[in-house]
Image (tube, rainbow, N blue to C red; front, side, top):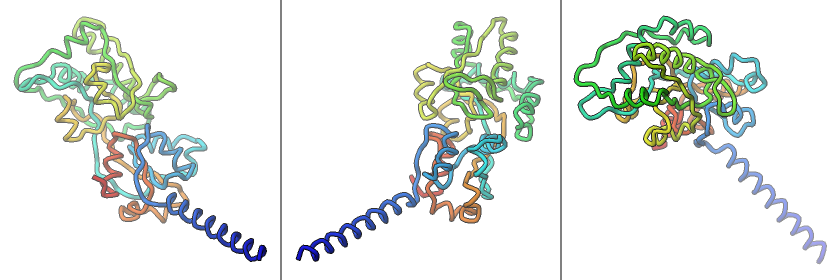
Amino acid sequence: MKKKITVIVSIISIVFVMAFALAACNKETKPGYTALSAQADVFKELNSKTADVGIMDYTMANYLLSVDSAMAKKLMIADIEFEKEYYGIAFRKAENGKYNALTDLVNKTLSELKDYKTIAEKYGIDGATLDLVYTAPTGEADNTELDYIKNKGKIVIGFTLNAPMALGSGDKTTGGFDTDLAKAVFAKISEKVGKTISVEFKLIEWSNKESEMEAKTIDCVWNGLTVTPARAAQWSITMNYLENKQCAVIRKADKDKYNSYDALKKARIVAEDGSAGEDAAKEILGIK
């Protein structure tokens, strides 16, 4: 009798373990979306196999994959084409019916900046540069933001460590295309307004950029910001200054598995919280 009970218990234990393992397996491979705190975390998730696909800026993905690192060597950009996008610089909105004089001044200075393409070449993204042509706005200028930074003697720029736009470690940026470009632009603006306006970079959570702007803990977002209709309605955004697109980063071993939009619908997708990549990921998976 004891032997029969032992056998039954053993069978039940085996069935339970198998069921648990199957459930865990299904949970691990179930398609879905997970938000990350930074785009760079895409590489970590793919290497640890806790995700199948990472949707992120092509500019950043291509740069990181060109770096000889353990994190990059097993990854690649999937042969799936995404729509073209553009980066812009966001400032607070002007009063109704007026244009932001600070945004306008940055536009004018960008179009005149001779170092623009040289800085892009330094970070290997000169192929994404645009012909920056200044168009004077119509209507009345709102000088609120321009006067605000002139009185402070500095502009606080919100950034994340988003290579090659902003490089560094901890809460400091030591260089990068956007970092260098912002410094060059405000060096020229300082000459134009007859007062030194220093540039301070403040590390932010990308998903908090809206609240940081509203609270005036930062004065602008200059960090590979994709221009969208929603952002254009919320902020005063400069002219497009760099071309970009989203891309799907995958493991090289999955090259034939994730080669179409339909295939991506069956994947565990990750992207940065509050990013254009997140919008793309949700659209792929049909998440509202």
